[in-house]
Length: 166
Image (tube, rainbow, N blue to C red; front, side, top):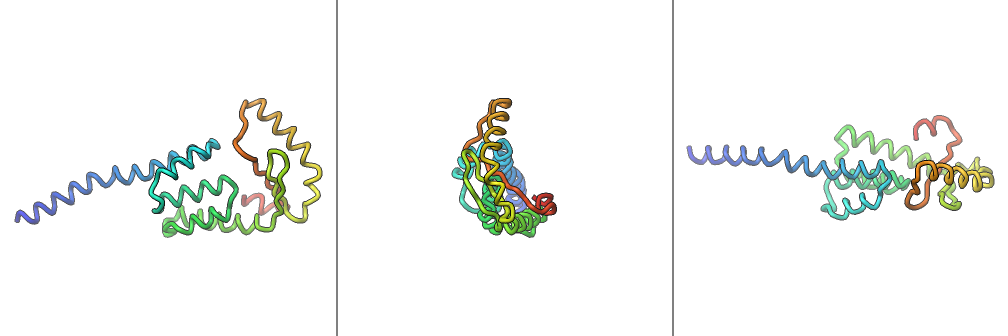
C-alpha cells in the first residue's frame, strides 16, 4: 500500500514541476521572437548561446532566427530538426521550403547598406536601385531615428503569386 502511495506522490510532485519546466523552455522562444520582431539579432544570438544546443524549442527559435536574417536554407535546415508532427511547425517547414525554392533562383548583390535579391529576369533593376535605396534609407532612418544592424535585405519578386507567398 505504501509503495502505491509513494508512486502516486512522486507522480503528483512531477506533475507540479512539469508545467514550470515546459513554460520556462517556451519562454526563451517567446523572448527570442520578441527580439527577432524588433530586429535585435544579437540578443537572439545570446539567447541561443545560453541554451542547450538541442531540442525542438532551440531548433525552432534558431530556424526563425535564420529566416529573419534572410538565410532561408539554414532556416529550412533547422526546422527539419524539430518534430514536424506539430501542425504549426509543419506549416513553418512547408513555408520555409517554398520560400527557399522561390529565392534560390534569385541573384544577390550588395549595394551600400543593402543586399539586393532579384530574379534573373529583373537584373536590370540593380542599375537603378543604388541611389534610390540609399535615399529611402536616409529618409526612413532619420524619421524613426533607427539604423538597423548589418545590411538590409531587399527582395524583388517578378511573379505576383511569389510576392504574395513571401
